[in-house]
Amino acid sequence: MMIPGRNICYEGWKLEYHGYLMTTYHGHAGSKEFICVDSDATVAEGSNSGDQDGALLYFVKAVCGSLKCPPYDGSKLITCAVCSQTK
Image 1 (spheres, one colour):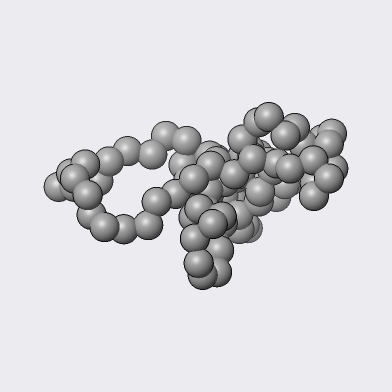
Image 2 (image 1 turned 90 degrees about the vertical axis):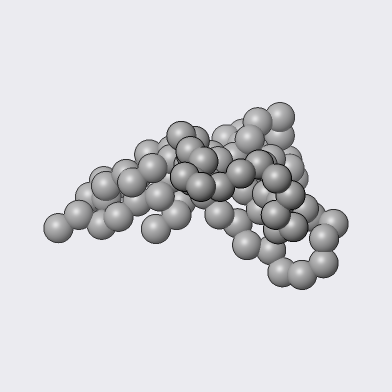
């Protein structure tokens, strides 16, 4: 489960990784999907930094008014946590 706005999991859940909430550019056409990108992400072996003609990801910031400030801060990036259920 991905939890936006947190970098830790709820009790009874295991943290897989934490990072930053990202999405495509707000002005681009099409639906938006928000994903959690690992703060310790590494480059995949065999990939390169050339233009792959793919989608670009952008960090998500809070907008006060749309979100309650505090606890959100309009000048900071929104964090996220990816958690799995423990048994």
